[in-house]
Structures are given as structure tokens and as C-alpha cells.
Length: 398
Image (cartoon, rainbow, N blue to C red):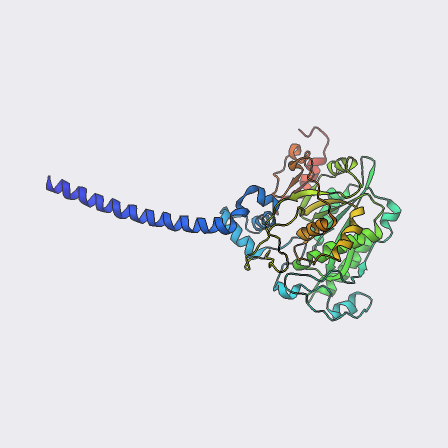
């Protein structure tokens, strides 16, 4: 009996020790969970994910770290390594927020102009407006071909492979529902030891396809606002007679017939649509790459804006947004910056008819699903050419 009591006591002691240890572990987990939820709570809300840049961060991380299935790890890696697929990887971004191209590059690549000495406006701003010039252009194409919608793909100069895939798939759609569709790629200047080689390759590519638009700013992540404003400048100067334009990233799949069908019913003034973010909080975390100090933007939330992965605008807006940019500090977060310019104009972006039309996370391929959407991000390992061939074959979609 005494032995049994002793065994029972030992078991109880062991259970208490284990229980205390489990309780301690649980307390630590809850502490870190509450800390994460306090700091990142809005990010973990699915609606906020659609509304803020973390959607792009997580997706980019998924493409860079596809073996990882841990959501928290994906977030931390994304915050550390975020870069846009439309630009060169970001390195020491404080130096990369430089609008003009170095003088040596201008003299070798842009008719030997002399660069104006650059003075940085600060780490969270970019230099816009600034007098940028087009080093490659197609100034007469819109006037001659009178497109209904112009597709602008922002892509890094080196990224010929993505351009060729787009040209051979959804970018090959030229006449849809009786409407002309035209494709252009927008580039900045390449930097690095191979800059001159890349430039010569681009000149040859331009002769072959006549679809490259290049301007004299450094092509890097922190200059995406410049890239976007240069896009608006080009559309306003050389394509203003077209009713609509769509900015789309190079890693997207676009259903052009559905896009045209939407635009045939859309208003032709003050119209911007896509995945529209509502109530996206302004990051006040100095460690975040989306950090914006209060003295730069005092509002706690961004005004509504269309996520930069793909959005549509009526081309009357180009001139208006350019004018608004003279009054709104050029924040380096390009899609949020357009939202600030839209707010200055007193114009709200338009929500799409349904949220299925635009996908910020990759949509697994099926003919039926892809027949219903307008644009979706794609996985890095997806064979877009093969998907396109299957999608365009005769037969019912669903």
C-alpha cells in the first residue's frame, strides 16, 4: 500500500512538472503570438492581405521559397527579401532611390546628355517630378493603330525571357471583340558591369518587336514610383487617344477577352479598377520596408488604391494624375502613391464587378477557372506557354 502511494506521489510530481513545463511553453507561445498579433494583426486578416502590400510580399516569398509551408516564416522571409519581379533585386536601397542615371551611362546610352547632379530627397521619397527622357520609344504606334486598350508591362531590362513568354501568349492578342489591343514593355536603365551589353541587346530586341519603351532612370525596386509616373507621361504624350490602359506585372496571366468585355461596359472618364485596397494601414514600423514616418504621411490609413500587380485606368486620368503628382510627395510605394494622387483629385478607384476577376495569389490552372478571371499571378514553375496553348484550344471551357 505504501509503495503504491509512493508511486502515485511520484506520478503526481512528474505530472505537475510536465504540466508546469507545458504551461510555461504555452505561456511563451501565447506571449509571442500576442506580440505578433499586436504588431502584425492587420496583415493576418485575409481582407487586409488583399488590401495591403503583404499580399505581394507573401506571394513573392512563395515563389522564392516554395518549399516553405510555414506562414510565419514566409512573412519574415518576405519582409527581409521583398523585391519586385518587374525590377532588378533591391540592394542597399538607400542608394538606389536615385532618379537620374549616372552620367557615364547617360553619355554612353542616351545621346551623350549630361546628367544633372543628383540630390536625394530622403530615404522614403523619390525624385518626381523630374525631367526624364525616353531613350527608346514607339511614339507613333498608338496614333497609327488606334488601340482600344494599351497593355503596359513594367519589366527589368535584363528580363528578355518574360517578355518573350508574354509576346507568345496573352500579349499576342491583337484584335478582340473587334477592338485593337497593343502591348508595350516599360524599362528603366540597367546598371552594373553588363549595362552596355544589355543596352545593345535591347536595341536589337526593339528592332525586332517595336514594343520597348525605355526611360533614363535607374531600374530598381525603389524607383517603381518613377517607373509608374513615366508610364503615365508616355501614355499622356503618345497614347492619349486610346480609351484605356492596363498596367500589369510580367508574372501575370491575362485573359484579354474578359478584359475587353469589362472595358466595353466601363466609363471612359475617371475610371481606375483592379484589386482595390480599402483601409490599408500605413506602416509605422521602422524595420519594415513599407515604413512611412508620420511627418511624411500623417494619416493612419492609405486612401483606396488599386494594387500594383494589375490595374486599369481610363486615359483621361493620365494628365490628371500627372498634375496631382506636382502636389503630392512622391512616396516610394508606387500603388499607394497613385491612391494618394487619386485622393488629391477627389476620385475613388472603382471596385471590380466581382473579386474573382483579379487574383493576388496564384490561381491553379483550369480552363474553367481561367475563363472566368481577368488577371492572376502565376507560380514561377508554371509553364505559361503550355497553359496558353491549352487555354486557347477549341472546345468548352467548363
